[in-house]
Image (cartoon, rainbow, N blue to C red):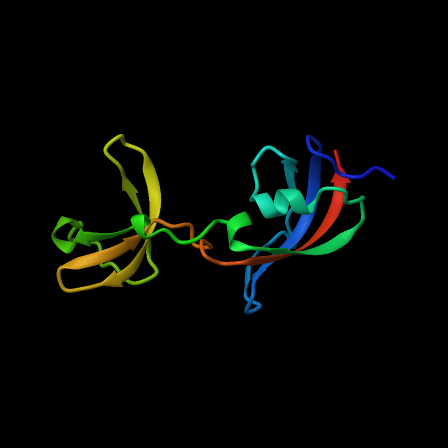
Length: 142
């Protein structure tokens, strides 16, 4: 039976959860996730985790922080003056916003804290710093 190798396009069903058991994403009720193995289109631990799997096989991947979204970076946490926020925006912790850099690139940020004069914005991926667990099933090698 054929096994997954680098360069194959695969379809998988998955259930992603944190170590505390909280689900952060799953493909249940949706089409399987399709990606080309070894191209970096999914996190490294997921990419490596499907290697050598056979169609119909199921397994659990325990992905360390370094092979997921990496550690949180203090450089991606910034203070932003409340005076520069649009008057109709009432920032709350957890709120997702978009910012742009001097080159005009837009990127997502989350409100991490709200103070009297500043809000703290976090541009880290929401799952940065988290080891991840995926239950996966190889549905097809395309």
